[in-house]
Length: 254
Ligand code: 4FD
Image (cartoon, rainbow, N blue to C red; front, top):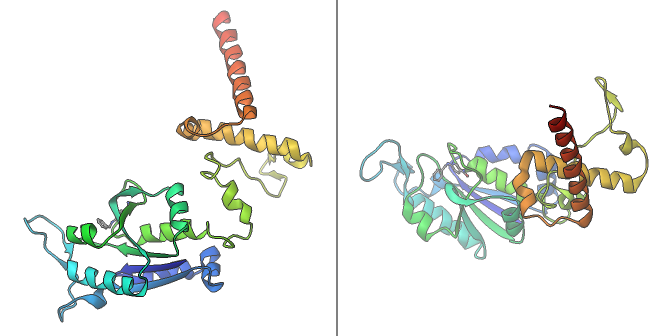
């Protein structure tokens, strides 16, 4: 996957190459991350990239000419690429969108600064606007890095363990079960017995059930549109009954 990032701060992207899975993916040529400095496409000799908003108001807007030049340059190199602008106005980026983008071979990520970019850029030169969440950042760079990270780890061969992307929260549509590693007792807290049992079926069931409980407690909304197995329903039914028994016990004694 070829990521081409258009930004006024190309040095920020060196953070992705500092270590970890993304660095390794670049080294093994599974992905490439090329940055293009939007300022190189400014058309005046002061290298201006922003200007005051028409109609007045505070803050600055990114001028269209440098952005248009940078986008056309990137598209010239990658004619088949999808051009994405990171903006709070965009479609909400989630695991499903990450999977969609992982099918592309070339992505151009456009990072805005200031109060935003001239509307004619977003409407005419961008294929899609994405937002990584409902908050405002000082620039699109961190959002672009979030997209690069989330998409890259889904590409074949990117993970040490290919299965882990499939077993992720949001791939299963549920939160991950709790994870433990050595030591067996940490600050007086033990690892659940079943994980030491060697009983693989019991472990699988424990993982599924704790995953269901965590999802119910922290993100109940996810369970509403998720396919549940008959084992899941049985487990939830049993919990339901246990809870009713407790409530009844307390309402008859008080
Ligand atoms: N939530 C996000 C993306 C960018 C950003 C910017 C238009 C503002 C948040 C274009 C307006 C870029 C996000 C820069 N803030 N700020 O994904």
